[in-house]
Image (tube, rainbow, N blue to C red; front, side):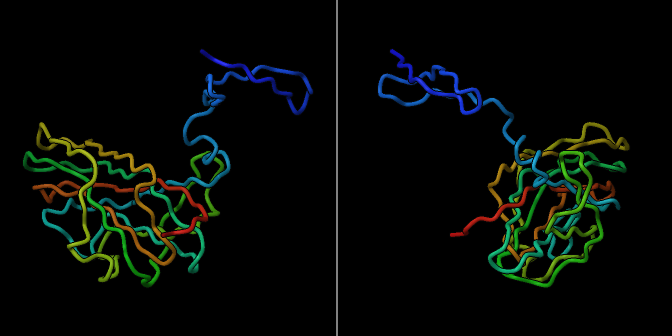
Length: 212
């Protein structure tokens, strides 16, 4: 059995019914997409490398296809990771599985050089991000990029044909990874073939939160 609660609309002052359970718990249907409001406000960003890098055939140390750094002072905004992705640019020479791997720094380290453009996902231009994004290479701090810190994420993709590029990797993170102020974050593609190249990237939003 459902219960109706009478409410008054703030603007029109008209009365309306709100449905609830028999115990008075409100029954609510969301009227917006999951990330729409964060994106609308201009707090969600995306960036990717512009120079393709080869996939790793072993766990890397300081090398990353894409690097992200939180430039905030201690106690400032955190970078909430929403998705990690990579797009194959040049083809591989052997059949292989490819997967995304990431490393999330645990201590404050030196800032990365901001060499890439962070774009708002509301199509309202760039700017306003506290993140510094670096192109691929040996860009991570040794404390951040030690091999033991690299973790797999998302499903792997199997290459069915050699010499054809175009594989895409996309993994929803949905806030499971957080980059606090002063920390680095790195992304790589890992596989058995080191000839194919990839552009790697990250989608994130920025928020003031208290970390436990």
